[in-house]
Length: 175
Image: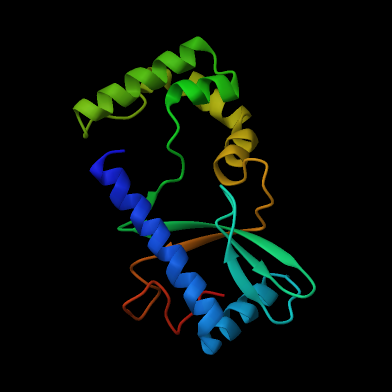
């Protein structure tokens, strides 16, 4: 794993640890989280949180329900570790046609050598767009669930919401 990959993985693991600690130890934070989850339609009594599987980073458990949470971290509008699989793996997973695979491969190499270059060239947009549009559900399933019970996608914004704090959580919740 590259140095950048290690740093990004550390950001995600630190976010998980901070959220676990705050849910399980900070009464005010836990109350606000329960209120948000109820506002989203989840029925909860008291809650506890623990780490879990591959795509389910955290599980919120209540006497009456269990919520699988996939946690993604964001800094400077960059999402870390949405998916680290190689293009060849995606070709197999999605049964990607060779022409789309070759366009994607050229695009990645072009962008790697010139960050200002367009990712997908104009003449290649139709076949790529058509392929990805027709496989969108499968792609999202692979990235966010991969067969696990993910009920909630949570974004941990290291910049915070509204007022700034030392963590990504503030007193001004978005829900």
